[in-house]
Image (cartoon, rainbow, N blue to C red; front, top):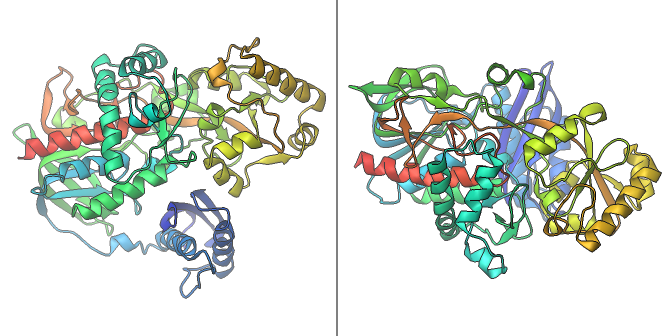
Length: 547
């Protein structure tokens, strides 16, 4: 096995299980379950498969599933084996070596935006659609997404008595983006979001739970029942829809350039897993390769202040597509706008969803004191944390918050929670001064009950829990690179634009690879909204162009 960090995924009972296997001196030294939504009962199966892989130090052949958790066990085996095969240079997806060919629409990237575009492009049943993915697994950063999908005026909101509108959604998004957003792109996003969620529901998505994220005036972040992570659920739905639509997905196929003819994009140049190359001709191309948050050289080139920051991005988020644009005249916009997320678990750099704060959690510093309105936009909260001693903080919540959001169980299963039966015990375990911390918690509880946060102005609708129900929990967090808001310049129809604003014929883009939707700061829940709304628009317009 070659040294490095290798990623694998498998299908569990409740969706995709994503693992990260570390190989050092040709031995497996660590296996981290990055994302999973399995039941509490199934956690023994997850731990058991990790232990077996560490003991066996090889592919898990002939390993029996744990009784009562067969699907979870098999998903873990699949995920671990995929990572180990990658370390051995034996990726399953590399077995097929492709030659020159053609199709109607080619989608570059098999994350949420790419598969949404593919499903929509293939919906008419008369076009051949191929998706190319350079990684050995599907999903990209969508696999890591937890919070949900923002939309206004949905059936789920109406069912819950939530009053919202696209206009309020527009105002929140523009304000959150410091008014640097491209207005036409935001208008398209907010106007199409509710219909896109209805479309996803028709494919089998559960978007019945609606929560609150920082910067939003009302609850509009849609996710599965109980607050389950959106990413793995969405990818499962899109994978099944892709299969039903006979979409061909080629993993370990890295696009290395675009094919153009007389100024029109007519396909892509691709590298097989064995290093050989081929040309795939197409009538329309959709770029959905994601951002560049894992390319730290590129990040610091555009934003030097982020030098030394950890990243929350998957290894494939390296910004490959930007090097292709010059050949066809495409342009970029707002590349310097790079978001750091305030609550990354400090030691393992695992994203702690903003929904934890939305469901009631607060932040305290090492002195045990609050220091910010926890529901401010991500840039404000991140800046506040960086100004604290050691540039970190503790995310604190109680059992009522944990019970309200099932994604917290993933953090518990990853051993990220510090737990105390009472506030004094939690303070001791977390290394916080007990007297100051307990006083902070009592003071906050009084604010929550009165509906007035006298210290930092958190609104009554944002203070959803008094945080008085034991046991109590804390997670040490610090900001990390999360989302690149800048990217390829597009119009509301997702045509890739030249610097003069004219479209590059035959070329479309969607998702984090594009720029202008989020302005200088993205609101939580708008990232997944971007990939599904604009992925669907790109797929529809690419199909029409191909026809």
